[in-house]
Amino acid sequence: MEDMDDAGHHRVVVGLSGSLGSLTALHRAAAEARRTGAVLVAVLAWEPPGGEFAYRRSPCPPLLDAGQDRARQRLLHAVESAFGGLPEDLPMRALVVRGPAGWALTQVADRPDDLLVVGAGRRGRLRRLLSPSVARHCLVHALCPVLAVPRSPLHEVLDDVHRRNAWRLPLHTAAPLR
Image 1 (cartoon, rainbow, N blue to C red):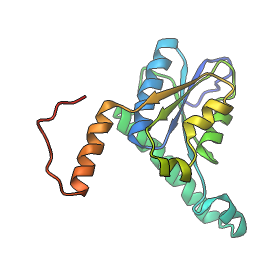
Image 2: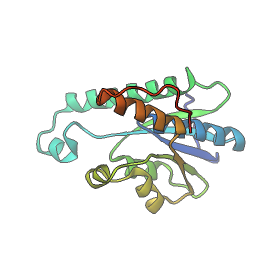
Image 3: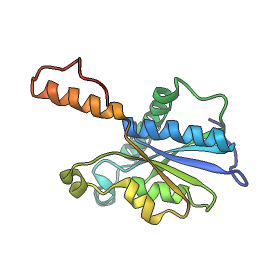
């Protein structure tokens, strides 16, 4: 990852969490960055254990440092998982930003000529109620274009296998991929 000043360079900013959806978004963002000659900026947002409110009530700097280190490790692991190492043909920066994911991404992608790439996974009603959608937040608040990358069709197959394993149902290995 290059430590460069991005001033004057077109940027493709992508949000990472390490999930399959975020890795799909990272690959799409890398393709867009290569196509346009842009700098790829991978962002992982993190919050202190228990959230900001709990941290303000009982601050513990060593715990905060450990959380930030863990976020850096997750970011590097996600890039390693996606590319098998750092892409040599692509200028790239990696940022760990403290704050909610949607807010962090819109703060980094703050130029009108940036492109913000986020995963747009399918979420159930309960998950939508319990945690706000990062993609939706970015679509509403971003100052730049936002590309919401849908889940890969393979995610559906993996979800089906996981569900069948959890319920101890037989796996249908002969079923065609959609």
